[in-house]
Image 1 (spheres, rainbow, N blue to C red):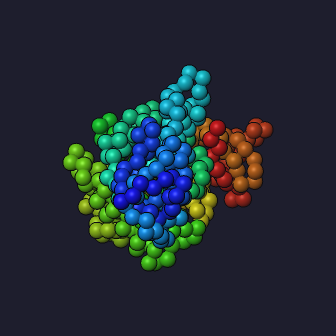
Image 2 (image 1 turned 90 degrees about the vertical axis):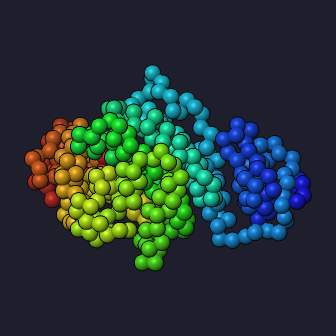
Length: 374
């Protein structure tokens, strides 16, 4: 073990002590392998030297991945506290945006901890779900905000936030108690935390996965359980929901191949929120589709996937939530959704900015391109 000056540090050296930021929000533990990002951060923190276990340089494919993740975390890990505080002159959109950006910054940090093999702060995740996201269910416009366009490279974290909010809404629409709704929000937030253990090149691939990559990706369900089982206070309904959210009503899902009533109630809700948000969100390899196209896909192209009662309730209430939303059409025109025709007609009536009323159910050449969130 040697004390090495900051200027002499090299990526790949093994740290022999724990180093923390001045505010103690970020730390690197003993035995960690240094990267360019960490060395740069030590300089910012005013460190003159650190203790190194050995100077043999450890290199590998994961170094670039860690540097990318660390840069993302360092950008957001210490946000100003005012970002999560409601100001009297904030618009609803700004309030929602600030809260969700704060939660996203914390998720980036926690996912990095999981990826590096450190214990994840489960109590902190529960607080983010129940004290930050759950109250947003009462905010006007929160459902519309879920459709705000986000960067593809932030999808993993934004998806967790979106699913947490979606399952909260669905739980209420189904008549669940508020305690159950809070647990659903928590389950949605940690649903895919196991993806922190999936190879970065698979998570960020700018194209469809190969069969082998898909099998590796599917392991995120069990990785999630392994990360969460250390919390003795986590309710069984949450763990069952996470384990089973990729099961299908027809029995062709994974990892257990459960069907029908064998699938837990939480899992049935999580499955719909997970797929819906994945369809409407921008990904590395494609742009998101409109909410109308998403529910059409879920109804007619994913037969056997979902609980019909939960899906029907979601579609019915989703349509109610979208009335009044600003939209952009595929022909470039903009307007607002005025109302929906009776189910199963999915297309709405839109009032354009020039006052023209357009019934999209009668127009095969025009459709909603996107929800405009402002």
